[in-house]
Amino acid sequence: MNEKPLTSNSGAGMLGLGILLMFIGVGLASSLDNPALGMIFFIPGFFFLLGFTVVNPNEAVVATFFGDYQGTVKENGLRWINPLFKKKKISLRARNLNGQKLKVNDKLGNPIEIAAVVVWRISDTVKACFEVDDYVKYVEIQSEAAVRHLAGIYAYDSMEDDDIAVHEVTLRDGSGKINEMLEGELTERLSRAGVEVLEARISHLAYAPEIAGAMLQRQQASAVVAARRQIVNGAVGMVDMALAMLSEKQIVELDEERKAAMVSNLLVVLCGEKAATPILNAGTLYP
Image (cartoon, rainbow, N blue to C red; front, side, top):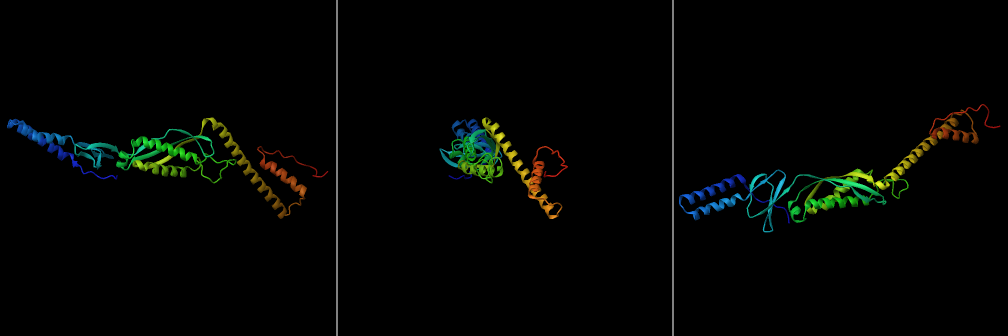
């Protein structure tokens, strides 16, 4: 079943016609002393007055006749629709769904808290009315299901000891791609209800309280290890450059033992957390 427009008449013209028929009916009944003749005009006039409905901007009216879909009215203003039609108003405005925090397990099995915000609106009134029982509840349930599914196929974060590739997308670092995938999955799920997804993004992401402290220590330890690695790499490069320049410019001749001592001293100075306190040797390295 596809959405189709329903031709509706202007409310102003039908209002005038209904009032005119009612006045004619009342006039005939009173002047001719013939109520039956007056009712012939009065009843249709009163019937016309029952068909008025107001269609606000970004609003639609779905009309059915004994269960048979007749069409959808989207023209704004005072409209007249057959009074025998059953009319249901549907808002076409954009709506926000602020999802509740969900506790789920990520790809690595870590419990996390995640929530999403979805901006949506009705794009097909027929599907919204006849394909699902309650399209608002349908959006809520399907949004929760999509967020749970997305959280289960990605890890919260990547660490060196995790069994995931370093370049793999994670929930914390890949927000752009994650939001795109969430929007795509919601679009597919909600199209059955005639719902258009305007925007979907993760609004809350954190480890569950029971492991938040442990994971924070783990992240801090990983950061310290990464920083130390960077320091060591830089120190080794500087030592190598110093030895190469001394050898190239022939400033001093160093045997292997003196080179080892120089490397040891430089690494201690460059990798130490505190400023080094030099000790001057007034003698030689050999007794």
